[in-house]
Length: 114
Ligand SMILES: [Zn+2]
Ligand SMILES: [Zn+2]
Ligand SMILES: [Zn+2]
Ligand SMILES: [Zn+2]
Ligand SMILES: [Zn+2]
Ligand SMILES: [Zn+2]
Ligand SMILES: [Zn+2]
Image: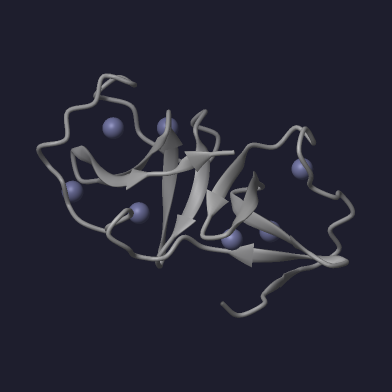
């Protein structure tokens, strides 16, 4: 994983810092500003979940989810936290990822909330 540094990030993420932590490979990242932040020494890296068996970037039109109204459109400020995945942005709904797709949400797999 390359080290992409988030500029001028004063806040230090840690357990109980107020941001949601999710397990990513062998570490914990924090959801902040629509990014996946990883504390790396004295700076913050931007992480993105990769495509994997657990988190597949597939279209799942059959996914019927009762966690939000069918008419809900995910986007900035929709109330769900954005999670970078592969080369797109998903939204965390409960413990799984939704990707807005035409008239439905794709299910991009589960994440482990730390
Ligand atoms: Zn934090
Ligand atoms: Zn990470
Ligand atoms: Zn960032
Ligand atoms: Zn789809
Ligand atoms: Zn769902
Ligand atoms: Zn939403
Ligand atoms: Zn996704």
